[in-house]
Length: 245
Image (cartoon, rainbow, N blue to C red; front, side, top):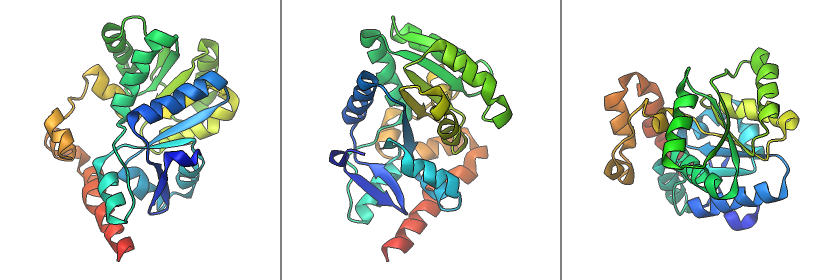
C-alpha cells in the first residue's frame, strides 16, 4: 500500500487515511494500469469481526485499499493518537464511480443484495448519471457452490469495477476467493449500498450523518439490526478504550 495514504491501525485492522478524492484517484490509477485489486470499506463492525475471524482479518490485511466508512473509526483513531481525515462511505464512493463511468467508460457490474435490488440500483444510477456503463446485475449468493456460475457471468460481462453487496464478511471473503480467477481491475465490497441507492432502505438525513447519528436513525427504522448497532456503538468503543488504557 502506498505509504502516502497513511494507514492507521485500530485493534490490529489497517485503515487507510484517505479522502474520497484520494480513494477515487487510487482506483482510477489501477484501472489505467490493470491488474486485480480489492477495496474494503471498513467500519467498526469490520474491526470487531476481525477480532475473532482470522480469515476475514487476513483478507482485510491483504486488501489494496481499506477506506474508512464510519465516524466511529475517526473517533477511535483520535482516541489512540492517530488520524483519519474523513469518511469514505460506500454509498458515496459508488456514486462517484458511477459518475466517472460516464466520462471514462468504466464498466460496472453490480452483484448481491436481495432479488431485484441490483437491477433497481442500476436503473437509479442510469437515471442519475446518463451514460453510466452497467455491464451486468445479479443478486447471486456468497455460497461457494454458486461461485462458478457467477464467475462465468462476470467474465462474460468484462467489467472494470465489480461492486459486491453480500454484506461483511461474506462479500470480502468472496472477492478474495474469486479475484485470482476473475482478475477484475477493481472489486469493492459495498455492504448495504444497493439497498440505499435503490431506495429499498431510507438513508439517514444528511445532518444526522454529519453528527455521527446514522446509527440512531437505523435503530429507529430497523430495530431488528440492534445487535449490529450494539457492536458498532457500544462494543467497539469499549474495545478501543481497553486498548488505549
